[in-house]
Structures are given as C-alpha cells and as structure tokens.
Amino acid sequence: MDETGSHTQKIYKWPRPLLREEKGLILLFYLAFYIFLAGLFALTMYVMLQTLDDHRPTYQDRLSTPGMMIRPKGDQLEITYTVEYTETWERYVQALNNFLSPYNDSVQAQKNYECKPDQYFIQEDSGSLKNFPKRSCQFKRSILEDCSGTDRYYGYNEGKPCIIIKLNRVIGLLPANDGQPPYVRCGPKSFLNSVCVDISHHSGSCSSSVLSSVAIRMTQINLVNWRTFPPNGTFNLMYYPYYGKKAQVNYSQPLVAIKFLNITMNEDVNVECKISANNIPEGSERDKFAGRVSFKLRINSRD
Ligand SMILES: *[C@@H]1O[C@H](CO)[C@@H](O)[C@H](O)[C@H]1NC(C)=O
Ligand SMILES: *[C@@H]1O[C@H](CO)[C@@H](O)[C@H](O)[C@H]1NC(C)=O
Ligand SMILES: *[C@@H]1O[C@H](CO)[C@@H](O)[C@H](O)[C@H]1NC(C)=O
Ligand SMILES: *[C@@H]1O[C@H](CO)[C@@H](O)[C@H](O)[C@H]1NC(C)=O
Image (cartoon, rainbow, N blue to C red; front, side, top):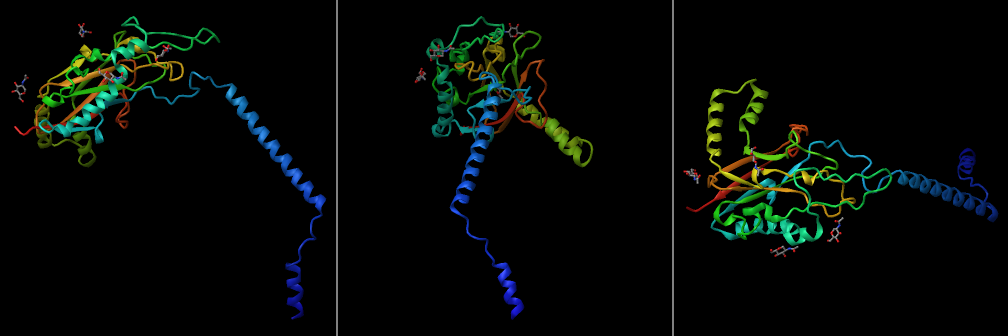
C-alpha cells in the first residue's frame, strides 16, 4: 500500500503553476516566431513571383504534339442519331451553334486583325520591351462554307453531318509541312492495326480469317465521301504561333470542318482524323488525342 501510494504521487506530480510574467513571455516568443515565419514565407513568394513572366508560362509540359478534339462532342466521342427524329440531333446542332458563335463574322471583324495569309504571324518581344497585347487573326465562320451553319442544321437533318475539328493550343508551336500549312487527314480507323496488336499478345500473329473479316469491314467503311472546309482541310499558317492566353486575349483557334456526304446508314462508322505536319512528332500510341482523334458516327434512318 505504501509503495503504490508513493508511485502514484510521482506520476501525478504537476509542475508548479506558471507565473503571469512567464506566460506573457512564452506568448510573446511564439508571436515573434510566427511573425518571423510569415515574413520569411512572404519574402520567398515575392522573390519567386519576380522571376515569373506574366505572359509566358515558365514551365510547359513537353506537349510537342498538340491534342485534337471534335465538336459536337457526344458522349464517348460518339455521334449517334436518327435522321427522322429531330430531338435526337438537335442537341448537336445547338452545340455547334454555341461553339461557333464567337466565330461570327461580325464578332471576328470587330475583335481580330485581318492577317496576311500563308505566313506565320510573328509578334516577338524586343528585349525587355513587351510587345503586348498581341493581335490575333480573324477566323470567320464563313470560311467553313457548308458547315458554317448557313443551312441552320449543319446537314444533320439530311444525314450529311458536319464535324468540326480543332487543334489544341500549344504556345509557340509552328506546325508546317515543308513550309506548307498543316492539314487534317481523315480515314476509317485502322482496325487492322488494332486487331493485329491485340492478337499478337496472345498468339504472335494475325490469323488470316481475322484479316479477311477486317478487310471486309474496312471496305464497307470506305464507302464514305466527305468534303473538308477550308479546302484541303488546312490550318492556315497565319494562326501560329500562339503566344498564350494573357498575351493574346482575342485568339481564335483555326478550325477545320468535315461534311460527311454519303455515310453508310444504320451502321457504326469509325473515323480517325490526324494532323499532318512534318515538324511535329507523331503522338505516342498511348495518348489517344495526341495529334489525332477518333470518333464513331452512327446515323440511323427508318428508310
Ligand atoms: C452569331 O450569329 C447568329 C446568327 O447569325 C446569332 O444568332 C448569334 O446570336 C450570334 N452570336 C453572337 C455571339 O453574336
Ligand atoms: C480584343 O477585342 C476587343 C473587342 O472585343 C478589342 O477592343 C481589343 O482591341 C482586342 N484586343 C486586341 C489585342 O486585338
Ligand atoms: C489543295 O492541295 C492541292 C495539292 O496539294 C493544291 O494544288 C491546291 O492548291 C490546294 N488548294 C487550296 C485551296 O489550298
Ligand atoms: C453513296 O453510297 C452508295 C453505297 O453506299 C452508292 O451506291 C452511291 O452511289 C453513293 N452516292 C454518292 C453520291 O457517292
């Protein structure tokens, strides 16, 4: 009993209460300490921000192959509708109306500059003197002719839909084909490669039966006629380089439209579009959107 009693006394022995002056000193110490830390933090932030340029990102991911995207963008990049049922395609028309409204000719004429076509629109800074704000070139939706919305429904009502393709912005990119403008090239998605790649994981080669069935699918899919706008599906050189959101506030990305004129009805049609420019690297196979985009079209018709 005696032993345990002294034991508990040791454990529960509190230090003597702090004097008021001591409490004050401790508080003062922590106050000074935190003010010092906050000051240090502010100073490092300040020094770091001084080294940043407002109009150019300091670091950019090595995104040398720009991504591509389509509009309208259905779920999973699928555009599926039935010609006779307006409600199945009017959302695509609405999406295109919204997407193209900043490209209205009047809006572009007011915001942007009429550039000299077929050459880069270089606006470099000279030394520390910032050439800012930088002008941007007009991209009027009328360039897209039959896909500009003149027919109100972009062809969706007749089973000849327009798809718009854009190349994502990459600061400083100067895409070209030996000085000629880059263009969009589309075709049936190469089932051949993907099937062979899949099979090679299992058996090491493509079986001939698979090959012939794939070949049949491809000829069916080839029964697609299309037109591109602007002609040849080019992105004019004058829209490059892009200098960034802050430097080029009114920048409008150039677009290419594809109008499918004779698509096989009631069947999935897989299309792949690629950017053709010999000075930007082929995107990695893993990145589905590097320099290319694939989508599925399925147009149903009751007839
Ligand atoms: C663009 O033009 C269409 C008709 O031509 C009009 O309905 C739409 O409101 C315009 N958009 C803007 C942003 O001016
Ligand atoms: C951007 O557009 C506005 C009109 O919307 C215009 O006043 C301004 O000058 C334009 N800026 C540049 C750099 O072109
Ligand atoms: C389209 O390409 C062809 C050959 O590549 C060329 O001769 C023609 O001038 C181009 N058309 C336009 C409008 O750029
Ligand atoms: C459209 O495709 C069909 C076959 O699917 C073909 O018979 C027809 O001639 C084509 N029409 C045009 C205008 O290319």
